[in-house]
Amino acid sequence: MENFDWKNLGFGYKKSDYNIRCYYRDGEWGELEISSSEYIDIHMAATCLHYGQEIFEGLKAFKGKDGRIRVFRMDENAKRIQSSADGIMMARFPIEKFEAAVEMAIKLNERLVPPYESGASLYIRPLLIGTSPEIGVKPAREYLFILFVMPVGPYFPEGFMPTDLVIMRQYDRAAPLGTGKYKVGGNYAASMYAGKKAKAGGFSSVLYLDSKEKKYIDECGPANFFAIKGNTYITPKSESILPSITNKSLMVLAEELGLKVERRQVLFEELESFEEIGACGTAAVISPVKGIYDADNDKWFRYGNEAGKWCTKLYNKLRAIQYGDEPDKYGWIKFID
Ligand code: PLP
Ligand code: COI
Image 1 (cartoon, rainbow, N blue to C red):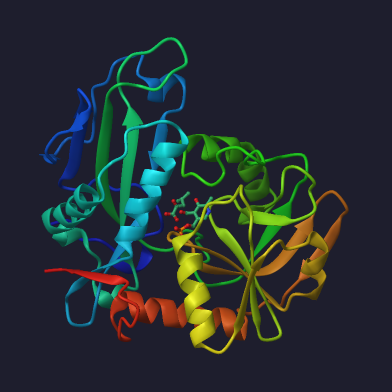
Image 2: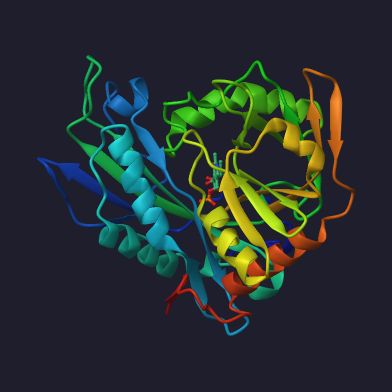
């Protein structure tokens, strides 16, 4: 058995023992299949290769102190991949099959689930692609669902250490009425140029403003945005951001911790008045933000070099539920025994 340095995994691809596949042909989904190959054999004119019929998900499984494996809110990911499928005209993958595939992949790769003490987790990556050939722009008739897993540490190498974000108005990630709310590969392709520029400048991520007016905060390249002001958790309401399951959970936990929650349009000018900022998502968990640089106006917004009180409380609370250190009051955990 491979000996992982569980505490220093980082966030990157690792080969697993098995992955799960399922094919959609003649209008219906087949059975889940187990594969040990990392490769797929597809038609060169497949719609995923030419016209971007590709959607994906990201979720995590955690090993508790009791040794039991817990998956966090997989029903939400199952629903979101259906919404993404509707968004770009792909065949919907059934919710029960999605959950069965998650369970199967975890069981088959159980040795890759990081131990409790490591603070790492098993990242689960489902994807759906159009596979049949088309050369005119239209949806495929055949689809392939694949789900694979890998052990991961924090998405941002800094982990829970605060990082800086950058605003660059000349780049958009998603169009106002486009595909920003779906988890389509094209959104990430659209974010790579600006993302690379941000990294080169020492920033962990781009903070996007709304593409139409550049007046409101949208989200980060790979995560949602939230801010704390007084006793309020504030997060953008926008048609062009991904509806984050982490953010949805944090809104519930924020209320439990006594914060008011506001999901509304957030003006760029409000950055001045916020006390704490966080980027949140499955991969990012909560990544506290110490500064936001407005590159177009050479102006900094600063939030302190230490993670703020509320970011810390929310992070600890979410992680405690995910690892089973706190009771699962909201029914977010599914055990894989
Ligand atoms: N926003 C974007 C663009 C993302 O890629 C992700 C990651 O999935 C998120 C937000 C966070 O969503 P979730 O909390 O469901 O992982
Ligand atoms: C996730 O948080 O699961 C994501 O999909 C973000 C990603 C771009 C790594």
